[in-house]
Image (cartoon, rainbow, N blue to C red; front, side, top):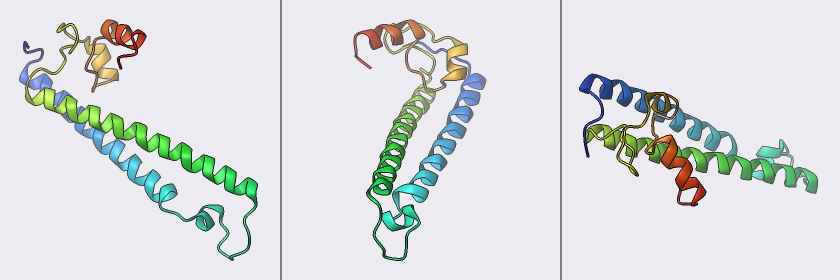
Length: 130
């Protein structure tokens, strides 16, 4: 695979990816601490031992499931960032893994962990391959 960026550019993208990864990990930690580690009584605010209304339990369970989904999605992004950092190290960052053509800088500035160009990403999504 051919080299896409000069070392200076790769350094800037690496820094951007590391900052994004730090942000994602912090968000995961906050969600986990605030929601996933609390007992049902703590979440509902009921620490008295009295019964909890079923509607409150359902609402709390929905919130908990929603936050688990957020954490799962953010973990997938962290994995994608790690893969992008590997491509930076290998100097293949910014090259589409499907067609081997350069990924547009504008796309990388928005989604720095992108591994496909826009055209290939759309094609793969239509084929349900990503």
